[in-house]
Amino acid sequence: MSTGSRVFVARVAGLPVFDPNGDQVGRVRDVVVALRIGRDAPRVLGIAVEIQARRRIFVPIGRVTAIDPEAVLLSTGTVSLRRFDKRPGETLVLAELLDRTVTVRESGESVVVVDVAMEQTRTDWLLTRVAVRRAGLRGRRRAAVEQLEWDAVSGFSLPEGAQGAANLLAVFEKLRPADLAGVMHDLSGKRRAEIAAALDDERLADVLEEMPEEQQVELLGGLEDERAADVLEAMAPDDAADLLGELPAAEAERLLELMAPDEAAPVRSLLAYSDDTAGGLMTSEPIILPPNATVAEALARVRNPDLSPALAAQVYVVRPPYETPTGRYLGTVHFQRLLREPPSSLVSAVVDTDIDPLLPEAPLSEVTRHLASYNLVAAPVVDSEQRLVGAITVDDVLDHLLPQDWRARSSVRRG
Image (cartoon, rainbow, N blue to C red; front, side, top):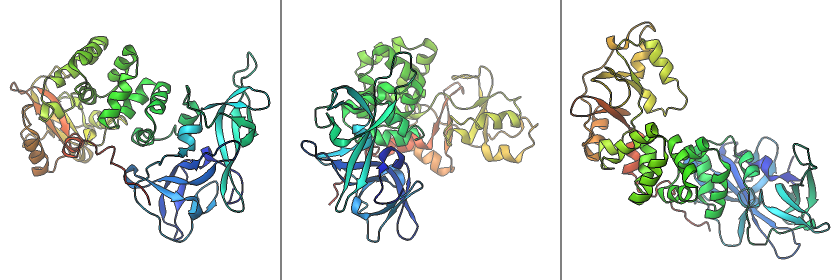
């Protein structure tokens, strides 16, 4: 598949992009086109490329010298690193055209767009063909996919009606939640809501945790109350508390009432603290172990892939009960210490008691100094009775030290 051949856009998504020196610039996230009046094929303007820190830039299609199954190659010349911002009249193929219902001109049949192909002419790249899924015969598990010429269908220039998201999500199914949140950020509110409706509760919860607060509130507000409660249950308690804290008190209480009591309880506890204190920043679900647990058991808990690196950096040893608020806090065992000890050793024998834990009322400035002074990525939080109530991680702190719109990273228009 090289320049000049037909290229289906869904197959390009995620491909690495290399400059002439062989250095990777980023990965393709979408293709930018300009739809045209009537039956004229849309002109391809360029590609949206994700570079470091989930930042997307625009690369003009004229800079693309080759597209093969493994990579996209760029020509000589500089590429602007200014953030991509979709202009009026521009359309993102994957984000906005996939899953759209269009009409076959000859038969009048409604079909759903599965993919779109682009092709190079003598002067331009154009969208030339559309892969669509027709309604299957009764009893068939899946309808057949058919390729049609661009001018054989109509409906791309009409206002968007109800549009699913199954084909778009299939393209991006392997994206990490933070990357999918980045893809959704620049879409219309309607398209974000359609994607949210198509995600399962766990995946949507993970994505919401990576989105700016205003989009979190927007998407949660678009869900039925019962599903919103289910999604909140699937979120980490501290993230759920942060989101509920952005809602009117009556609405937050209504959703808490719909949550399972054991899921709502830690969220209510976190909401009791000011959001600029250790209590308001902490998670109530750190790794908690009894003193007679072995190093092998501790390492098994640390290996949980659902834990963030900061939360997995250490375990907390306490007396029973072993859910927050626990029994008396005994100390912390750092991950590196666990790696140096025999698997059969007890964690109580290697517990670190030299650093005092934080109190829930500790202000953000004190929390920051504490982590910096002792070179920590996480720290325990205990109440006045020395019971462990949670742990605060460096990413929790950074979320509150950075500007409120840091996830959105306000766009700068390209020249």
